[in-house]
Image 1: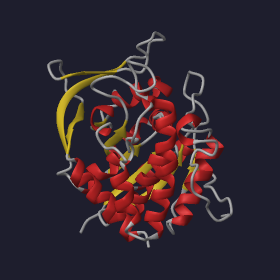
Image 2: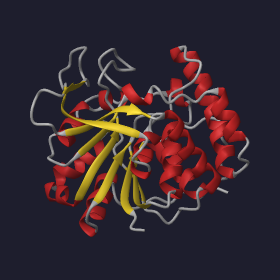
Image 3: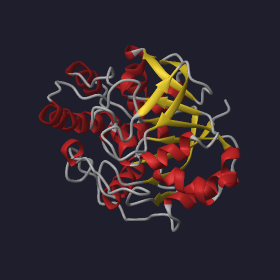
Image 4: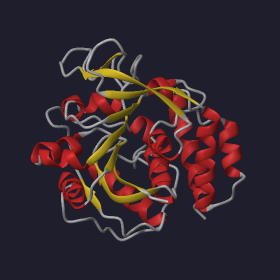
Length: 307
């Protein structure tokens, strides 16, 4: 089987943690590098979380670089209300030695792309690192097979009525990526809000009895409690792993070709993903439907592999 080479650009984050687990344990993916950015928490916290996760998944050999601590132009926004003080509240990791790649996140992305062809770049946080990589070396776009992002929405946002968090934090970066000419696949709130970590999901995961399922259950209990307190939700949506699931099982999501632009104004519409099937050109494949049952089967399958 030929594996898909991927770079994961993330801001762990409870849902990023599960996306990283899938990246490490999928038989269809080859994780080349991980870059972190500020988003769900500050850069030091998201980076420490990524380091802890890679070590926990026995992938400490994967290059991990600290990326941008702030958006291209705007003030940083974080989300401790959902992800807690550490950015990954709910699980206690062993005290792993801090060891990061010497390069900045965007430079690790550039170098990895220059060394490899047909790489899929996955972003599960603000798109700052990838935008910086494209700005510093536009030639890398020819080696990007596809950008797969969790972000945006065909409907309403979650932080503002108009915008989803990852795009809202750095709309200028998203705009650079969306206008780069690279094929994009967008998995937004319109589908990820349907993927809820219900009590039944947690019970099924708990019955698996692996290191991965233990991590999942402990993280998701805190994640759900915070979602309930902040958004009033009885079950939190597991957004970020949608990117990885879409790569390992093409039957889970349906996509439609659309024209998508990013609102980079400083109005209450900032960060909105303006999606149109009528307007040309169609520059993004937008997820419009999800098979929730199949989604969770992929999650359970990979929790079993993390023994």
